[in-house]
Image 1 (cartoon, rainbow, N blue to C red):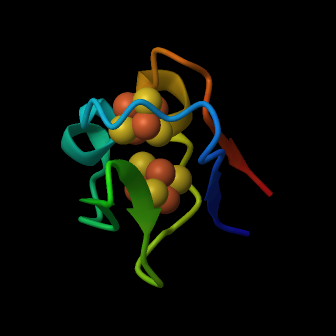
Image 2 (image 1 turned 90 degrees about the vertical axis):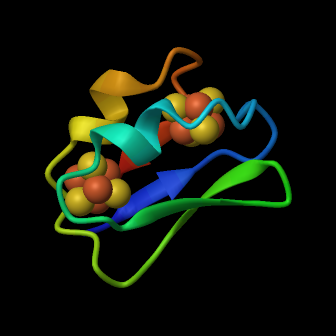
Image 3 (image 1 turned 180 degrees about the horizontal axis):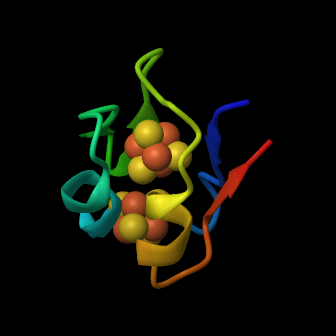
Length: 56
Ligand code: SF4
Ligand code: SF4
Protein backbone atom coordinates (compact mmCIF):
# COMPACT_ATOMS: atom_id res chain seq x y z
CA UNK A 1 0.00 0.00 0.00
CA UNK A 2 1.31 3.40 -0.98
CA UNK A 3 0.10 6.71 -2.34
CA UNK A 4 -0.07 7.00 -6.12
CA UNK A 5 -0.02 10.43 -7.81
CA UNK A 6 -1.88 11.03 -11.07
CA UNK A 7 0.69 13.10 -12.95
CA UNK A 8 -1.92 14.14 -15.52
CA UNK A 9 -4.05 16.00 -12.97
CA UNK A 10 -1.49 17.04 -10.32
CA UNK A 11 -0.90 20.81 -10.48
CA UNK A 12 2.12 20.84 -8.16
CA UNK A 13 0.45 22.94 -5.48
CA UNK A 14 2.32 21.25 -2.62
CA UNK A 15 -0.70 20.80 -0.35
CA UNK A 16 0.00 17.08 -0.05
CA UNK A 17 3.64 17.73 0.82
CA UNK A 18 2.55 19.85 3.79
CA UNK A 19 -0.10 17.30 4.82
CA UNK A 20 2.11 14.21 4.87
CA UNK A 21 3.11 13.24 8.43
CA UNK A 22 5.92 11.02 7.17
CA UNK A 23 7.75 13.46 4.93
CA UNK A 24 7.13 11.05 2.09
CA UNK A 25 6.05 13.62 -0.49
CA UNK A 26 8.10 16.13 -2.42
CA UNK A 27 7.75 18.08 -5.63
CA UNK A 28 9.74 17.13 -8.70
CA UNK A 29 9.26 18.45 -12.23
CA UNK A 30 6.10 20.21 -11.09
CA UNK A 31 4.30 17.16 -9.73
CA UNK A 32 4.19 15.37 -6.38
CA UNK A 33 6.53 12.42 -5.91
CA UNK A 34 6.03 9.68 -3.30
CA UNK A 35 9.00 8.10 -1.54
CA UNK A 36 9.35 4.70 0.12
CA UNK A 37 8.56 6.37 3.46
CA UNK A 38 4.84 6.44 2.62
CA UNK A 39 2.76 4.79 5.36
CA UNK A 40 -0.46 4.80 3.30
CA UNK A 41 -2.25 6.94 5.89
CA UNK A 42 -4.39 8.76 3.34
CA UNK A 43 -3.78 12.30 4.62
CA UNK A 44 -2.57 13.45 1.22
CA UNK A 45 -5.67 12.05 -0.47
CA UNK A 46 -7.81 14.31 1.73
CA UNK A 47 -5.52 17.31 1.21
CA UNK A 48 -5.30 17.25 -2.57
CA UNK A 49 -7.60 19.85 -4.19
CA UNK A 50 -7.57 18.08 -7.55
CA UNK A 51 -8.18 14.52 -6.29
CA UNK A 52 -4.89 13.46 -7.83
CA UNK A 53 -3.80 10.97 -5.15
CA UNK A 54 -5.09 7.51 -4.38
CA UNK A 55 -3.81 4.93 -1.90
CA UNK A 56 -3.57 1.48 -3.43
S1 SF4 B 1 -0.55 8.28 2.27
FE1 SF4 B 1 0.14 9.37 4.15
S2 SF4 B 1 2.31 8.77 4.38
FE2 SF4 B 1 1.71 8.27 2.26
S3 SF4 B 1 2.31 10.07 1.05
FE3 SF4 B 1 0.13 10.33 1.65
S4 SF4 B 1 0.17 11.54 3.54
FE4 SF4 B 1 2.25 10.70 3.22
S1 SF4 C 1 -1.99 18.23 -3.41
FE1 SF4 C 1 -2.59 17.19 -5.34
S2 SF4 C 1 -2.34 18.73 -6.94
FE2 SF4 C 1 -1.23 19.47 -5.14
S3 SF4 C 1 0.91 18.73 -5.45
FE3 SF4 C 1 -0.17 17.18 -4.22
S4 SF4 C 1 -0.96 15.69 -5.73
FE4 SF4 C 1 -0.44 17.55 -6.85
